Image (cartoon, rainbow, N blue to C red; front, side):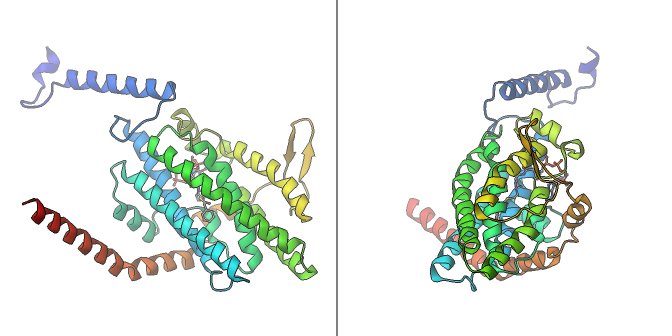
Length: 333
Ligand code: FAQ
């Protein structure tokens, strides 16, 4: 009776709207609890949608900015075969960006908005792509370690509660697995090559190891989003657990290469059944995340320039689509 007195003509009575929202929330929670996928047309809480837009867009930006460190070596790959493989890999990363932007768009945000956020420096992308690639061994180290870390993080995302993201991840992971192997194979060739080549591989490993461990994100105790994202089934495994899995899997791979991981505290812990490892430099990580890493400015400037130089391609594609639309319209008339 009281609520009816506040109703606005032409609008749903508030009590009815509240009951409807309550039912929608219950259905959403039941869907999450039963491990059924949430699809774009399903009702979802606004905070769930925002979290997904944040994570998927950061992921998409990481893929396209991630093309740049390796892109540096396309013209300098040591053989034609290495060049062809690297070109395929870098193109794959661009493709991953496209799947991910498309997945983000299903949540009602436009690609232009997301790209504006990246180009204005407002959006985050993975810290790891702000380090330089000074030698060919860095290409091996990126494939082996960065793609290795990316797979470790992305395999659980194939079970993410949001359908379009989970499905994009299945395809991405298949391609990342080829990327990881090509990187390891470069490291294998260098580690078994001349003493100078082996030194180059060790130097790359020394520089990439710690940034790769940091790439998994802050410790669980400092991870502001993990708790809620795990409850919603967006994240399935925590930052620290993924980091530990990665260390455990990578130590034997380094041993096979005959290279030394740059951590004097790295040691098998029989009691835990895991490797212990030294502390991560979080000050360096946050400096890089906040825009002040070795290559942040260069990466962003390159991306902005590439976008501007590609304007004519986008315009041509739009003009072509418009021409096709008009033609179809005329044919139908
Ligand atoms: N860099 O509370 P959490 C690849 C931010 S793809 C920068 O733990 P969350 C393929 C985080 O955004 C690599 N920022 O956050 C490839 C948040 O900031 P916000 C990218 C980071 O979301 C290979 C704040 O810290 N992969 O490598 C980083 O629960 C080779 C608090 O952190 C993905 O994006 C970081 N490393 O967990 C391409 C996978 N870590 O948003 C080319 C999907 C954390 O509040 C070549 N994403 N932050 O301002 C995820 O799994 C999660 O978003 C995490 C972070 C695990 C990255």
